[in-house]
Length: 73
Image 1: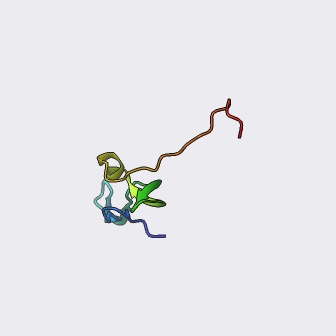
Image 2: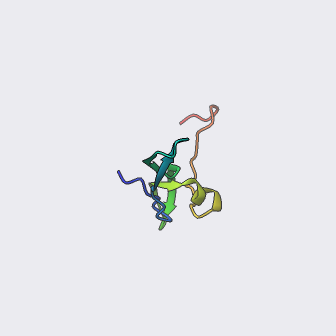
Image 3: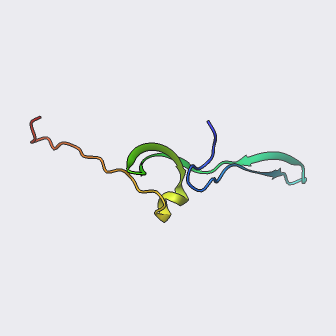
């Protein structure tokens, strides 16, 4: 499963851990991806998007209807 946002394409970034002695070891920063039920082209789909896209309003979340306890199906 790719660690990539399906809206903006944000993915892992690479860099170095730097110790006090300035020893360098490779490391990765992963995007903060969340699984969201979103409305895409009129259909509800589960997609993985970064929190920046969710906060900025690029993702239109699907509405969920919960039955109240008083309703009888």
